[in-house]
Image 1 (tube, rainbow, N blue to C red):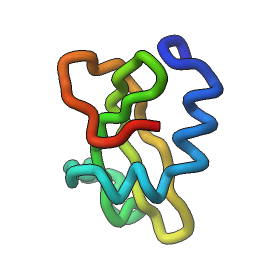
Image 2 (cartoon, rainbow, N blue to C red; image 1 turned 30 degrees about the vertical axis):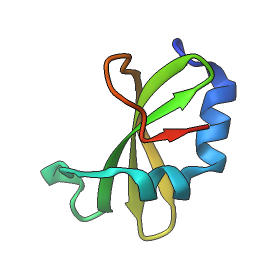
Image 3 (tube, rainbow, N blue to C red; image 1 turned 90 degrees about the vertical axis):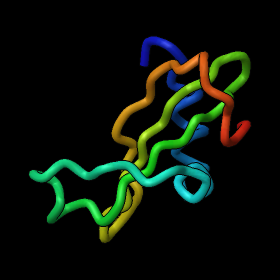
Length: 79
């Protein structure tokens, strides 16, 4: 992960249910509707970086779809 590092990815993975619960619903692509139950977008503040995190809820687990820098948004959650 170029922008936040593996440490940020590890923290987001550990707190995936919390990150998911604070997020706003996002559209699930047509081809993934049989796999993903719901997808949510959350803006997370980690150290000095503001990141947009998209997490999908599947039948078995939470899956991190994307993590991108998003410095213009107010964070929904601070880790």
